[in-house]
Image (tube, one colour):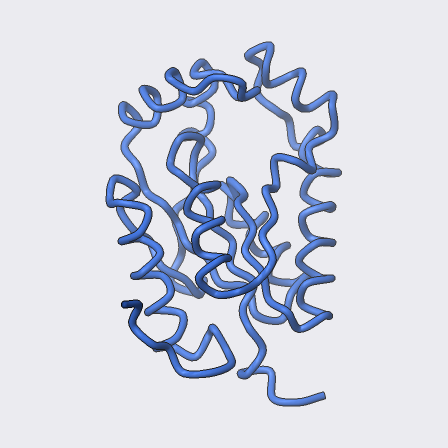
Length: 185
C-alpha cells in the first residue's frame, strides 16, 4: 500500500460565494500538479434552477450533490493522485463527510466579510448563485474547528498570496506528500 503520509492531500477550498474558491482552487491545483474539481458542476439542474430563482437549498436538495463530491474525493484518494475541489462546504458535518470519503482531506477556508462577498457576487455575470442568497450562506457557515486539518486565510489577499501560503502550509506539515516544497521563483 505504501506510506499514506506520502500521498498528496485532497484540498477542499471552502467558503461562501464570492470568496474566490474557484480561482484559488484552480491555481492551487496547478501549483500542486493535481486534478481540480469545481463542485458547482456537480449540482443537479434542479438545484441550480432553485438557487437562480433566489431560493436556498435544503438539506434534501444538497444530499445528492454532497454524495457526488464525496465520490470524487474517494476516487481521487483511491487513485493516490490527490486533488483540489472548490466547494462551499459551509457546515462541519459536510466537511466530516468529505474527510470520511478521503484518506487525507485538508481544508482551506477563504474567509470573507459579508459586505465584500455581497458586492463580489452582485458583480458576477453568468453564475447561477444570486447575491440574494449570500446572507443564507453566512447563516449556514461554520468556521473550521480545531479538529479539522487546514488553514483559514483572508480571502481579500491576492489569489497568488493565498496559494503560496496554502502550498507552504501543506508542504511544511507533510500534507502535500511527495517531494519537499520549493519556494516558487
